[in-house]
Image (tube, rainbow, N blue to C red; front, side, top):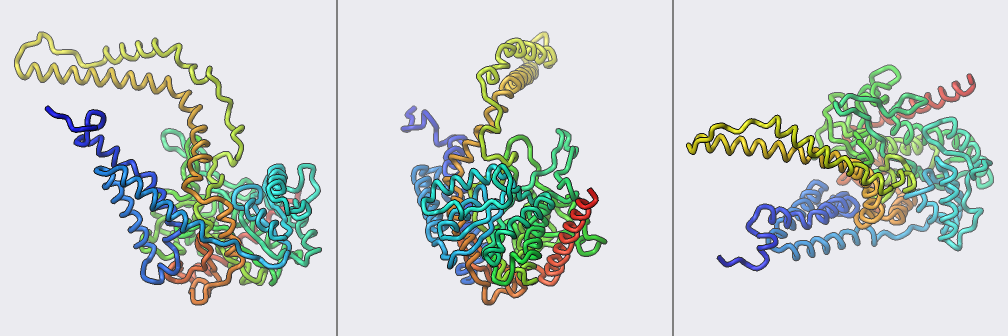
Length: 553
C-alpha cells in the first residue's frame, strides 16, 4: 500500500495528528485574546460606533478558533497568520501611545515605586524634570530602584528621587497594610512637600493580587489571608484603606489640595468587582470585609496567584459595572473588588476637594511581579538546586518498582483455569489480562511519579520563573508602556458626556482614553455612590482605631 509523503511521522488521518496541528497556533490565539484587552475591547471609537466589547471579544475568539481549524490542514499558514495578527495587535496596543508632557516641574508622589509600573512612572517623571517622592514597602528595594533609575537616566539628578524619612536603609517603609507606618511616612513626605507648596502629581500604584485560602487535600480551609491589624481581607485593606490613610494624612498636613492631580492604577478586573449589600445594611458595614464571601483565589504551590477567581453565586452581591456577559450575582474574588475600590477612592478624593482631579486607569496586561506568591523579584528566594536533590530517589526506585508491581500482580483478578477455547473463555481471559496489565501500568506510573516528585518540585518554580522572565514579556505589555498610559490618564480630563464621569467616576482605558457610556456603564450609580461614601467612612474609622491602639501602647 502506498503511503503519502509525511504520514509515517504524523499521519494526517489520525485524531492525534489533527489535535496537535489544531493546537499549534493556540498560544498566539490566546495572546490575541489577552492583547485585545489593551487594544480593542474598550476603545471608545469602536464601542460608540456600535462595536461593543461583547462583539469584539466574540470576534477575537472566533478568529482564534478559525486559525486553529485552518492549522489542521495548513499549519504553516495558520501560524504565520496568527503571528501577523498578534504583531499587528501588539503594535496597535503599545506603539501608538505617546508620552504626555506633564507641564512644569513639580513634586510628585508614587506608591509601589520600587518595581514594575511604579518604577517606570518614577523614571519618566524624573526625566521630565519632576522631583519624586518614592513610596515603597521595602526601603532596601526602594534604594535599589533609585540607583537603577539614576544609572539608566543620565539627565536625572539624585536630589530628584527622594525617599522620605531618616532611616539607615534609605528611608521609611510605606507599608500600606500597617497604618502606623503609613502615617509616619506621610508625615515625612509632608515635610518635603511643604517646600513645594504641596504634592502636584499623585500616582497611587501600589497593589498586588491577594492570595487565596490555604486548603488541605480534602478542601478544608486551613487559614484565611487577612490583614493582621484589622481582620479585613488583605487586598482591600492594603489597596484601599492604606491609600486612604496616606491621602487623608497628606491632606490634613496641607500636602494635597485643589491644585493636585491624582490617578489610581486600577484594572479592567474592576468590571468583575462588587460589594456585598451588608456594607450598606449591617451595623459597621463589615459583613463581607473579613473575607466571608470575597477573598483571593485559591493558590497551591509556587503557581502565580490568579487575579480573577472562578465565579461563585452570592445572592447579596452588588455588581458595580453593567455587563451583558457577566451574571449579576457572581463574585469573582478580592482583586476585582480592590481595584473597584481604587476607583471609589479617587472619586471621593475629588468629591471632597482633596485633589483637583482624580481618575483611575487600566494600565494594560503588564509584565510585573504582582502575582508572585512570595512578592519577591529575586531568584535567590528559591532553594538551591543540586544534583543530589534531583537524583535522591533513584537508588530506591528499582526496589519500589518491584514491590509495587508484585503487589499489583497479587491483587489482580486471577486468570481463568483451566482454559478452554470457547468464545466466552477467550473473552474472560482477555478481560483478566487487560485488568492485570492496567493494574501493572498504574503501579509503574505511581512509582515513577513518586520518584520524579522531588525533581518536579525543584524544577517547577524555576520553569515558572523562566516563563515569567523570558516568555511572558513577548505577550504582555512592558512597564514603560504602561507608565505612558498611567501618565496620560494623570494629564487627562473627564469624559464630556459619560454618566459615570458625571458621578465622579473617571476611568481611562489601556491606551489612556477616557471612557464614555458605550465603554463603561455603571449598574446602579446611586447605590455605588452610597457604597463609595460608606467605604470612605469605614476606612476613616479604621485609621482612628489604629491611632487609638498606638496611643494605648
